[in-house]
Image (tube, rainbow over all chains, first blue to last red; front, side, top):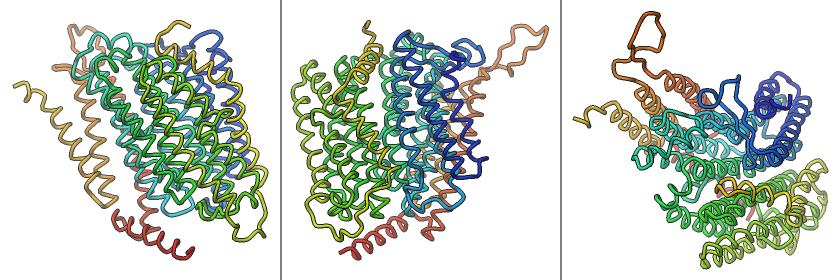
Amino acid sequence: MSTHVPALQVVVPLLSAPLCLLIRNAMAARVFAVGVTWACLAMSAWLLHAVVGAGPIEYAFGGWPAPWGIVYSVDSLNAYVLVIVSAIASVVLPVGPGAAAHSIAEGREHRFYAAFLACLAGLLGVTITGDAFNLFVFLEISSLASYTLIALGPRRKALTAAFSYLVVGTIGATFILIGVGLMYQMTGTLNMADLVARLPAVEGARTLLAAFAFFSVGISIKLAVFPMHQWLPNAYAEAPAVVSAFLASTTTKVFYYVLLRIVFTLFGVGFVFEELHLHFLLLPLSLAAIFVGSTAAIFQKDLRRLLAYSSVAQIGYMTLGLTFANLTGLTGGIVHLFNHALTKGGLFLVAACVFRRVGSTTIDGMRGLGRRMPWTTAAFVVGGLALIGVPGTVGFVSKWYLVLGAIDKGWYGIAFLVVASSLLSVAYVWRVIEVAYFSEAPDLSSRKDAPLWMLIPTWILIGATLYFGLFTHLSVGVANQAARRLLGIAP
Amino acid sequence: MEILGLWNYWIVIVMMMIGLYIVMSRENLIKKMMGLNIFQVSVILFYISMGKVEGGTPPIIVEGAKNVVYSNPLPHVLMLTAIVVGVATTAVGLALTVRIGEAYGSLEENKIVELDREAEREATGKAG
């Protein structure tokens, strides 16, 4: 049984999605879907434990060995991402679509769970697969499910947000398909481990450059690297609250993982950084993402839009860690993937709580919220501190490694900019805190905090940002091991 | 001669650009979906021509036949999956278009943006 866990990790949510459609009862579908996400979490935790202890696992489907069949290969890096994705899903899903209030017609909730599980299965599949074409298929499964989930948003603008995400996302996915095709043309294989072995033989060919360009630009669109981030704020701000909490903390992380795989495992540091000089391009873009994203966040009128622009900036930190291409910087990038998933998931759940009680997420509507919803606002304060990177929270841990990585590289200016950019996050977090605590509430009659079933998941994520800010053994330890593997340094 | 010999790839590139141009330049959402489809089809053609071997036959083993050159079947199989993905994308896209048409009463992008702006102005006007 335990040998089949890598396959079950994806197969279980994938098959449960249509089952949810058959369960026509909202409550039963909810219990079932939550159970499935918890099972996913258990499996991914088991996988992480197994690969950290005993090294990578290969799973060949139907017994077909690697270059011919499709394999799932799990190592410490993607087991780490699997745990994050399924953990966020299992914390966020119990909140349910009801938090979005009236966005889903009565008697149709079970369809929401089906789409959610399909999206989860796609993301887990992208992470676990060891086959380049399989990656594209899972990417499309998760994307199609996320378009429908976003379109469920409460306002009609959600529809246009989902549509433009669909157009941009499909172009990105098709670019990835072209990249895979060009690589197949040069090497005759789709298996990633096999590609690693065969790509050096054809290095220098122009087709390979085109393959890398298509693949990395396609992934960057899905990851929302700076100039290609336009779809993200609309999609996250208009989706149902639970959906944006889930998508904001998982999709971009999974695609960051894919980018790491392409750059470090498939094409290798030598090709990407020494021959192509990718850091000349990606470094300015990451810094631009950090500064433009944070500055745009300061001027937003809507809490969720503010958080979405802050996500653009945080993706900049992650790609910044990638450009350092040294152990500390890469550890920082991977840890930030983990930390940001917790922080943004928690903060979007705060937005969901606000939406539940206030009826909108405009910052103006949050006046005096500190007295009306003390627990929710307190959660925002802790999450905001983690975004800024105050010591004791997870944000500090990842920024610490990023700054150290920059210093290791001798890029003192970059290290300074990383620290300086935190001031911008202070500005946008403070704006919300000021409105929530220091301005008069319109009326104090509705002194009711968010319901307990929403507060508990919010505080689990927010509490985790504190826990992993103080006890970094697990998060940094595994990230360090993963970074070592990517760079080919023996542990 | 070499350029002409790669004519199928030229067709792929031309179709790809036509598709992308339509997606970017047209205001009508249905036309955008059409452009997206042309773009995806160009990739299918790319894979198919990649698998073709000159003088190759379908890869079916016949007893007694010797020195037969086979075309590569794998790209074709991959494209079956890609076609399914394309159909699913189009279905979701058109479903969204129908909903947008119902909610806004228009399928022109500039009109929709204008309607959104108006709604926002009204909302802030009420609040202020």
